[in-house]
Length: 98
Image (tube, rainbow, N blue to C red; front, side, top):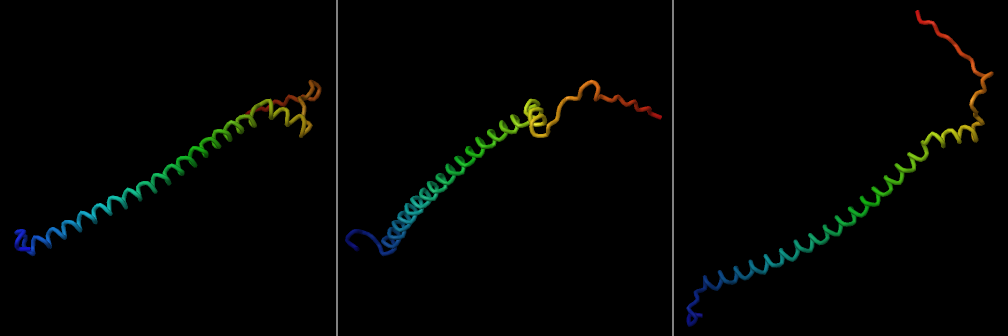
């Protein structure tokens, strides 16, 4: 090695430097792999969120439809056999306040 002008310390230093470069490259590849895995998880969570948003909007529309005055009145007439009172069935009660 003397003919190349390299000392033993330089060879060891170059070897360590090469090892550091390989270790860094391996770490970069591993971190990129982890990033891709997390991105796939993020996409699936976003898809689930979007599906829940769609379901929530559907339920809100259904709730609004179930609570309309016409539906409540129709249900009262059909299921509960309720009807508007006739004029003879009305009673007016006066309440006197002290």
